[in-house]
Length: 260
Image (cartoon, rainbow, N blue to C red):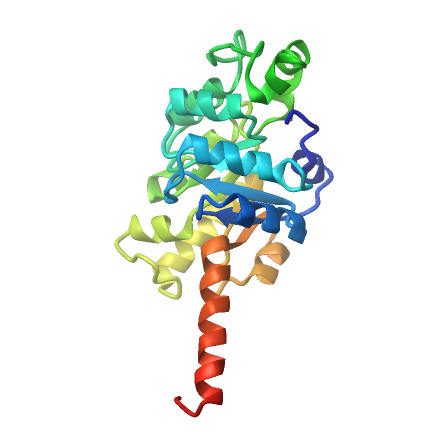
């Protein structure tokens, strides 16, 4: 439901924030993660199987937790963005933003006129508490929203200063897998060329004054990222937690039985 964006407040104070991907479309998993102490979660509609109806269920589960609810949309699509905002997401992550023009389109889709082009239904949507806070939502929702643009290609790295300068872009988030893939070295994070590209993206974001976000990868653990200036760190996902816990228990049991 409509509330102050605690993540945006934390970032404005210069404090790093820890997030978790939600890919299982499970309200119970979302609630567990939200109660575990993460500053924010990212409902992943780029790679996860969830529908917008699933997203609604996750948002309802998260509303009883302190975690800020971000949604990564499948693409820079104003219709999808409008529907996600109407559900009450507190931030949006846009994948594969390569230019200032694309960033402006993303921001514009997030805001009502005259600031943007978002269609208005604040008299009834969940984001505005089903119209119970419609006027307040219309006036303040844009200020509470967090807009994150992902940097995932070498071309996007070249455009970081221009993307960061777009009014309404709050954070630039490096996607290291797709970024490494854009130069033909997918997932090869210890390759000197990949490392140099990641370093260049990091420096450009920090120099721009935007909030630097990313994920830990080989050679760039969570603690190092924070020390280097990252303030949005997404360091786990619900699928990984279930998979790791299950595999570890099975392996421990097989070892106890002398089967391994």
